[in-house]
Amino acid sequence: MAIERVRAEGRSVAVELTAAAGATPAVRRVGGVSEAAARAFADAVNRALPERAEEDVAVDGSGLVITHVLTESPAERRQSLFKRGALAAALVIVALALTFGIREGGIDGFMLAVTTLFGGTMASVTTAGGAAGLWSACRGWHLTRHGITVEAERTAGTPGKLRASGTYVYTDAVGVSRTVSGSAGAWTIHVAYDPQNPGNVVVRRSGLRTVGYVVLSLGCLCLGLGFTFALIMVLVTA
Image (tube, rainbow, N blue to C red):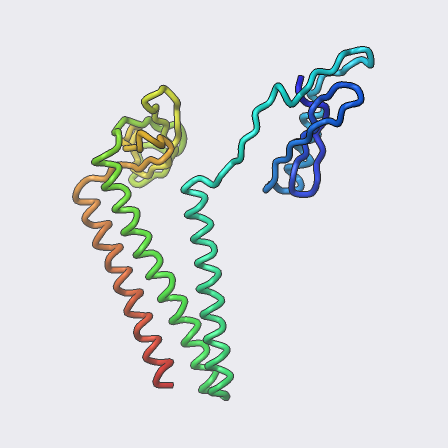
């Protein structure tokens, strides 16, 4: 009742609201989508709109809708931060490899560039992996102790196999069903979620698995820092 038509405008969608005759219709835009998705959405909504006769009195669509700004979720912010960090690290590594390789020249410069690329990549990946693992362990520890623990039931995947991944469904305190990925290989698992943000959820691990996960993450972090130190020493002495 509130929508006159929808227009795809590149990577955004313009929603034109209904208005009285002679009045300028209000337009609301939703951005940050692909061009194909914008076109598909506009076509689908326009096909679903009711046909209005010319004598029909158009209502003011602005009074029938509520607009608010969508912000990034914590998971989306973490993903964006990870992508920007990975891109920055890759650019730094490539720049260092080219700089030292060109400065040294010859076969020695080529080997130094390869060493920088390989060592920098290994240092970045292992350091980031170890840090992410420790952060995940701290997050799981916090939610397990301060969140709400419920049982989640498998809905997809292959049950009964060791470490088989699948999708599990749990119900929060207000009755909303939510999904979480798990690899326990069981029909049911225990998950803990934040009561203030029920979508923030972790699969509960046993104490032994948690200790092993922390040790492995700490080892990756130390290995990554060791690679970084060794690379710095190679570049300094080159």
